[in-house]
Length: 462
Image 1 (cartoon, rainbow, N blue to C red):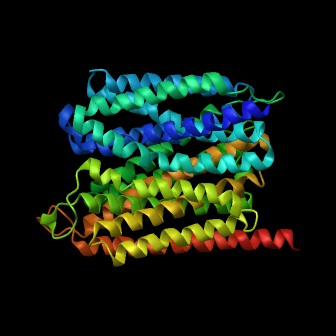
Image 2: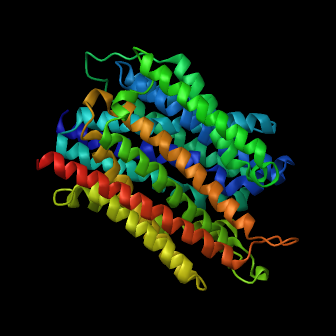
């Protein structure tokens, strides 16, 4: 690409990745408002977030495969058109079912992040593309920190429709940006979607996300929950067999089995559990009323402001990581970032009586997540052909989505276990217990990343 075109392409890629992440996260601060406005239970309102995660997890590998083919530009534009249409459904005065349909359509946009990486790798110089891919990975994380406070403020000022109106405006802007800036894919590409694999994967992910979201099922009907978990595992095994036998797999499972890719995905899965666990703990603690004996009783909007240090320091880490990569290998950066997130857990466990301490813990979390997200693509793409960039990264994002969902569920279950009979809020000690669990999770992530670094060192220095 010409230098002027590349300069326009980079902000477009970052903007689209930021928009789809922010819009998909809109459900988080609006759950209570949705329950009130539509006269549904909080459990039903929770599906405005879950359905977006589900559709995103299913759409990501499908779009990743389509993005590896000759019609990548058309795929990007069509997907953004679906997201815009879904955004319109969330704004119009329609029943709750239409809102859920709109949120599902918005979630499809999460699959575009991997395609943005594929575009960057195909159309930018190698060194430039590595830095841009790292930033795309970071903005896909910090998008939640950008959308959360804005959506909460609009909900307080103009109601839930006004908050969803933000999604309509920015997704329309993203569609226009893509139409003006997305190049065609290089010639000689081909792609076919494995429909059977997509259906089985969708069923498995539906069960996983359902089990992650329905915390009461685990506490009241453990046998049913365990049975459904077994079914989900079986479906994932069936899906793997289908992919191995398919001539046009949805995800190249053989490539995923490469030690570097498998190790990176394991680190992403476990690390994602820990990262989202701490994010959940801090935001929930900040909104707990003083009457519980702890907490700060913050409104949804003010609690959203706690995410600002998460977003700012996450972006800083994303900008620094490409420079550090010239001296430190990506797996070591993953390990270091996991240690930083573990430090955030330790800070939260030891000191949370002052709001400034919550801001500090959230900033540490953001820096760790930013570094982890920026280093992850380098580990995977080092052993991935250019033509498979979107497909390989899309699988990593499915793993991340499942990890985030389980992190949220583990946080909820741990706090529920620490809630006394007849009490509305958990004991303060339950947060300490959850933080200690998080430290253990990030310790495992660190060890996995160090094993990756050791393997790479042995391969480069036989």
